[in-house]
Image (cartoon, rainbow, N blue to C red; front, side, top):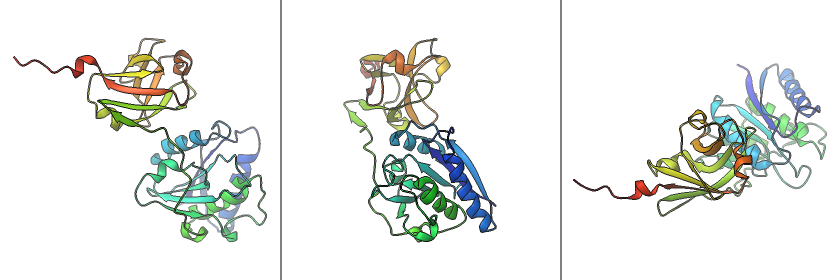
Length: 272
């Protein structure tokens, strides 16, 4: 069975960067008389936006089979002293720069991380400006063909983690923030579905001074009206039906979001 590698970058498709990485991986597989299957997750991560890249990985990786290697390159510090990393978590392996891209996978028990240091698993010449091709793609190919991540280099106990907006539970409410705006203008928040479920029913969401109701799906909203729902990735999101919540609410990454019970749901019911 062919090894499986996904690719997530901020490279776009105008230039040859993605093709160069794929060529390196396919060449390594051919020399080993094996095969690789390469799947593009996205190459449209906003330039240099590590948080957006991390969220793309968080959304996509769980739907790939165990053993998949996820090659991710959003790397504004390429060529500096930052480490190259392979992280093994939940049956998957993630390969890329040690800059916080793999933060969502460092919250699970049993993860392992290794620095990509061994010369045998990189190209003979490593450009300081394109580690995606010369360092990460070769490592990803070897891992997908069966290499133990521990052979890449020394274990790493302190991978870089992004400073996610903290989710706080206070007085019957849950507070978080917007972490991403998708191409539809939906505002993805730091609040997971499990936090919303804890508050039970009768909820109201406040974002940027505006109150919106919780609905089941986009079509439950009147056209042009904002509301909140639990998206397919398991996070609370704010949407405007057939419009952009980011534009309508003038919200962006960092805008506070608070989920609380309505006044009616807080009042004790009278006994008859």
